[in-house]
Image (cartoon, rainbow, N blue to C red; front, side, top):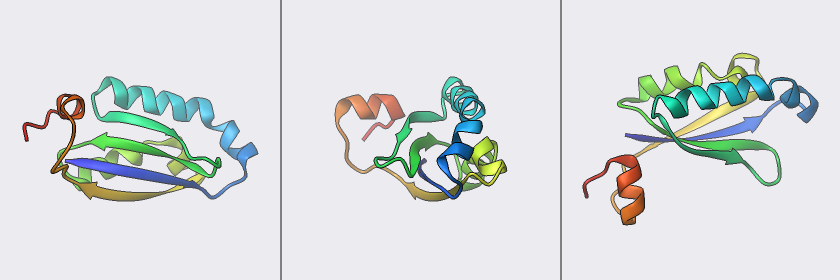
Length: 99
């Protein structure tokens, strides 16, 4: 399954910056494990987004609970669970989808 994480900062950007290195380490950890497909900042800079692969919603929740932004109350997470029904060939290969 895929999960779209939408992060919204609930603290000022100076607080966000204090935890940015730890957040980037968190991202790298789950990219290496194969869970994250893409991530980036929202424009304007009010938060970010992450596309996550995980077998269940519970596993996706365990993943984002590791984010220092979540742990430190820097950002709140909104999660949308979805299964792609249509995508281009490149994306199908990235997510391991046969349809």
